[in-house]
Amino acid sequence: MAIENFTNQQIDQAYATAEKAANQFLAMGNPQAAHNNHLIMQRLVQQRMANNAANTGGNNPTPQPAGMSDYEIALSLQKQQQQYERERQQRQVIQTLQSAFSQYGLQSLFPKIGEYARRDLTEDGVLLELRKTPEYKQRFPAIEPLAQKGRVITEAEYIQFERNAAQLERAYGLPSGMLDDRATVANLLTNEVSARELEERVTLAAAGAFQTSPEMRDTFQRFYGIESGGLTAYFLDPEKALPLLNKQYAASQIGAEAAMQDITIQSRLAEEITTAGIGREEARAGFGRVAGMASLAEGRGDIATQGQAIGAELLGQEAAQEAVQRAQAARRGRIQQGGGPLTSQQGVIGLGSAATR
Image 1: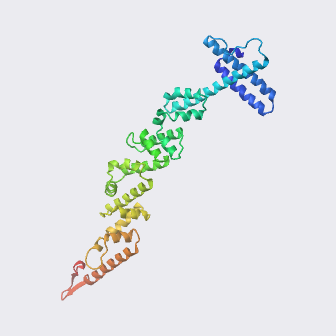
Image 2 (image 1 turned 90 degrees about the vertical axis):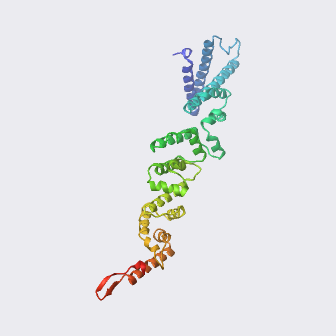
Image 3 (image 1 turned 180 degrees about the vertical axis):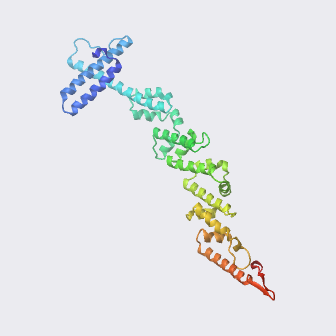
């Protein structure tokens, strides 16, 4: 097909092919072949100008008067080619950014994209201007606060975080809109909650609100004043550090294990047990032993309090262990003293009471 019959789209495609070939020939050290392709590019530019003039009912915008020298003709063609290249770059910027901003749901900024591109701004330059607009800031409210903190996040990363949050909300059965919400996402990102940390928080939130025993929920409320209905929001609050949430969750588990043995402890002791590396199963066994020592806190003489029993059994506190040993020894002594068989002329008549001696 002759160039004269090319559409503007075909001209653009042919121009890009010729330009690529010219650059390759130059790199290969073949200037003549590169020159030939430049001539084709010039013809394509001329034809596009002719097409544009025909479409508008006008004449060729760059007429070449008779008598023009070869130099003047070459200069005119060079200017046409430069204008064509300028417009091609503008179209490329517009197409690239409009495609991206369509995915962001910001088609309302298409006119501004065209406006900035025609000022010959680069793609980065146009994007910089677009980020100043109210529409952009409303769509990506966390980007500017993060930039002020020296953190850079791309629009693609922002959208991926939104998608992850929505997926977590559905996967863990959280109330609709708890995470799949722009304001919530912006708050999380602004407080530098990563996708991984968000998943950990959601796991805690779901476990705390929906998958725990009544004792666990009651203990969390007693320890930290958070009712079961507010547990999910509490764990997702980005202003509360994740290590603290993990510690409080583990401490509440410890407190719940104690409660199931009819033992009441305070949050400070539960956190101390957690810090000592005592897990839920070990705590359950330890509180079971403590419950069996309840009688050591009764009677006269050496006794061991519940706190000392916990210190001995779960925390390995030496002083507490010694107190328990003394109480146990005193109890054995009382049994030996008062619990032997009572005799009379009729023989053995029973055992004495350890508690009343």
